[in-house]
Length: 102
Image (cartoon, rainbow, N blue to C red):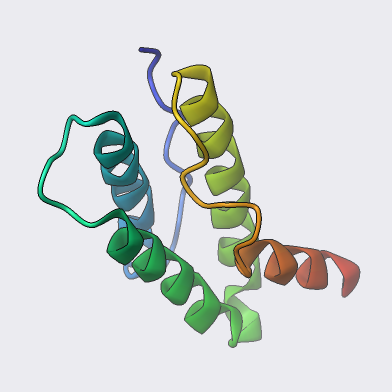
């Protein structure tokens, strides 16, 4: 297994635990962590991003985190797992909306 991508530099304390949650989701999917519910971790990550996206001042942090999630999804696939956050998640729409308003 290769090492996951480096954590992004995030100014918000609430968003800074998202990279840790993504690693836990990966471990749940691969059977390393047992007894946890993947859906709860995914929901937590998505809801934190959605909440922070409501405030325009968090725009850069939110985009950086969504880009990091995309990198983690690729890393997960490289390590014989599946997407950590699915393509149907609303976070991808948030990123495209933010990028359109630039």
